[in-house]
Image (tube, rainbow, N blue to C red; front, side):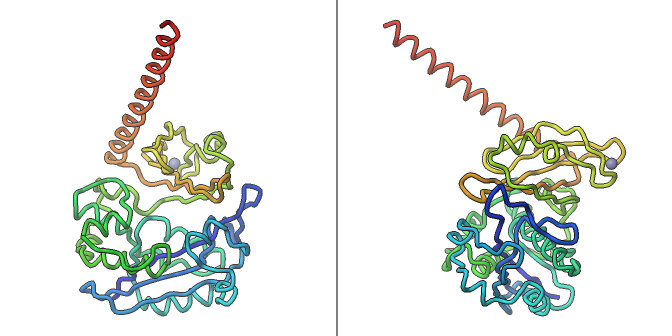
Length: 321
Ligand SMILES: [Zn+2]
């Protein structure tokens, strides 16, 4: 059995007016345009690599932001194979019963969406783990999602290749993986530990692009967490953020228990946001994490208010003088 460390680049719709496309009941929040992967043996040694581009099918125009970030050109994509052909090669590269490892929890849901959109089986997604969780558990027990750059620096690894190329990112992730106890991390994974809040979403939904966050939070379909089991729309706590593009909220189904949701916004263009909402099983750790983030955000608001008050006071004083 091999470990497959993989990373993908994907293309997103261009603007708010463009609805998400898809087939077989899936809306694609991103169409895969590059897959990069490194194969590790049981001992964590690199034994192979894989890199292929995918010809666009659903989103034929290459998003400018994606193009700038990845440096992938229209011409490269036009010459590539369509997804089913590329995936067949990836599947063959992975071999029997692979364990997929990613940095972050975005790649696997995107892979699943693309497989469904092409009518392909999603079995490969089942045995997948987020290395961020294993990294946190085996280092300082942190709860936040560390960037790959953070993990590289943590181990004193100097990246030699450019970021935002799927193979390069997979290679750097593999270098981090070499420092981790993969078998141990996988065995302990999903034990409800504090570092494992964001494992295995029960529900992943992408939402149509919004002009700004205010519009997103006015959309009930987005803010009300549905129960992944019975589908009931649940009364949902306030969505809070640590600052940045991640928001979390708690909900509870009277029948099926506690849940925690997280929304990730990403910029499709300067004036357009798209977002993905994942719903996870709640736990005491989820509740603690939410309370912590909530308190910090209230604190930030208080400090902001105090600053505004102080500015008003200073202005007034100036006038009086
Ligand atoms: Zn329910």
